[in-house]
Length: 160
Image (cartoon, rainbow, N blue to C red):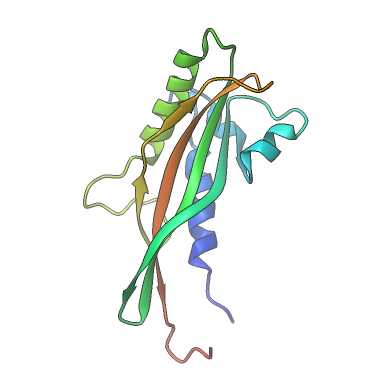
């Protein structure tokens, strides 16, 4: 019987964590009710996509680090938040969502995040980047690079 795929488990845990963003949980937006996985541009094409929106999109990871019978993978994602707004009033709205995303994903130095599965040992957050509404899209966006630190180990007696 194959073991759990930590790469999939980490991605699903990230999506589940982002889904906790709600006003009832102390955040500024209800964006957690609208979390999707896939390519942001394709998700926007869907009918009735709704805003605020969070999309977890695969991105380039960092170089793996070898260890004894293991490999530490830095699995990459872009967490893209989008808010419906016009060109003249998008800053406050996109900054509210950016604040929520950072607060939700914020690591605590030296502490394993309790929302990550065993074997996913941490998270690195990159610098956020904001974009105004443009090219016919009436949504402002913030993109936050995220890397999940995942240990892939050789299983004893595994046939490869």
